[in-house]
Length: 400
Image 1 (tube, rainbow, N blue to C red):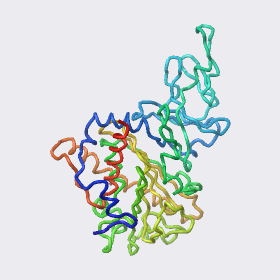
Image 2 (cartoon, helix red, strand yellow):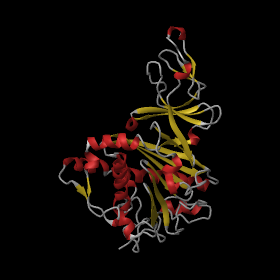
Image 3 (cartoon, rainbow, N blue to C red):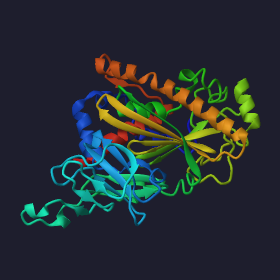
Image 4 (spheres, rainbow, N blue to C red):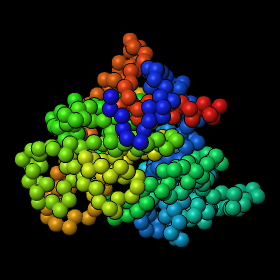
């Protein structure tokens, strides 16, 4: 039986071997527990520092799972701060969802105005208010912090852990990896499935030889590894990393062959030859038969770290059976025309594979909700799926 390097059977089996109940994907009551006891206590990634590079740049996230809207802004002092998107006067929503740049935030209801640090700077006719104290009417803050250029927020009044403690041993695994990458592609979709089902579909490779039989051909499987078993799997408490195998004897199709030939660094689905500059968290075994890594920062951030490109996924729960999925592709700045072609081919190929991954989800949710079967069966190659559900359940249990 195939077993990833660095993961012993006892480490796998302490998570359990029994079938997993479907209840956490169909129960509105359990979804509400996830909202209150997980997401409202967790450090949640809302974007990249590069999304708001200049003073006054801001992004607004309407976060259904947190039952709030959040403003994330870079101040005049270059600090990134986050606030609930609400005017403390009559609780009007201050800024529409999206991105922009401003010197101040002004409520269009009564004109109350706030500085980039959240302080109230103008209130018309404040003499009409009894015992008015401007310092008590700042925008309500949200805890915010950075990790490797990712912006995280925590809406708890007092988080139990700071961001470094939340990430644990994952902290130093990717130092500098994204420093020179830039956004090259972005997609989003609302899919009628539970958010954990979406995470499950994108974090195991057992399905690759079947679901992606045409789009990936034999690039992720070989006679030596027919089920595309992970090269390595590492569990970092709630977080996880799996390194996806690539067939070193893969025969590319004519378009891929041309792309690989002219590119300085052939990208997806080429085997990503390991280079010395990769941080320890990317292809940790330095296995040359490697495509990319599947990395999950608990609960809803995922990135696919490869050599020269990276996918970043956000899974935003909208309800027990509806999820907003966002995917971003980051790449190094192309140096040659061949690099441009390789990157454009990768973007198109990734888009098609993501659509295939999406194709089973609504059907799975429908059949779970039918109640005909109440458990899912998992093999050892689906250890990341089990770890996902067990981590969510354990976190909620610890909150009680």
